[in-house]
Image (cartoon, rainbow, N blue to C red; front, side, top):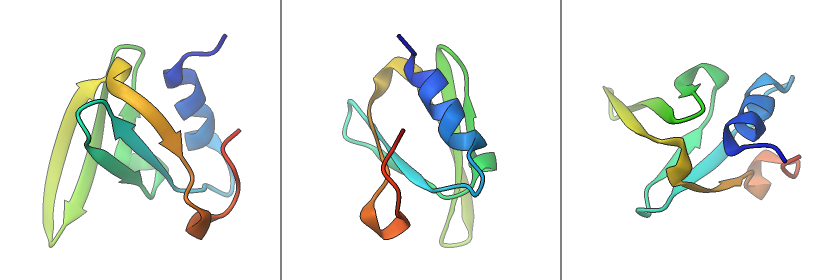
Length: 79
């Protein structure tokens, strides 16, 4: 059985890259639109986003990820 971290690493390695959305247990959602905006480790993850010209960094436990989705607007289904 693969871990969430392994599943996400596979999505980050796909070429061409297909954006996806991570949903956390606290309701936060992160659109991963480029493979270099997400650092994924077995226990800790971080996503760097730029919104309205400001960069932010969110750090969370990988176990907090409750779903990994590829919205229809970006195409293919998740592996």
